[in-house]
Length: 102
Image (cartoon, rainbow, N blue to C red; front, top):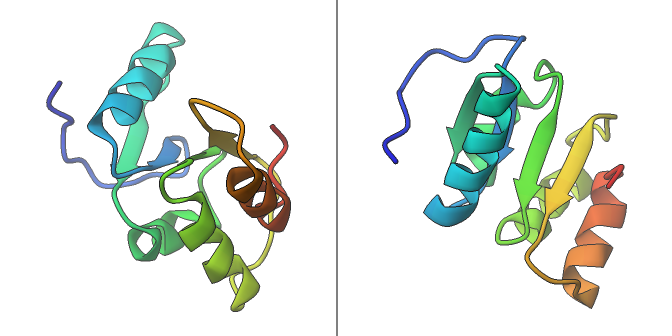
């Protein structure tokens, strides 16, 4: 699935993952709810969306890197979810650092 490149807006969900499979799955779910998404493939690109996106979905592949950004000064915020294929200690630790709600 090819993701359109559009400028981010405050009404779009931000998805941070380098996994095309995860990005496609979340984009399909959001589309079913008539919600548009911005997909970024690295934590630095997420910084611009962090304060304004109504919901942030962080893939387990980038959770530790995004958590490191939070540990180094990016403000914790509400509306953060971590998407993972399986439970693991490192993803749980990153989710706690992020203040993830799920």
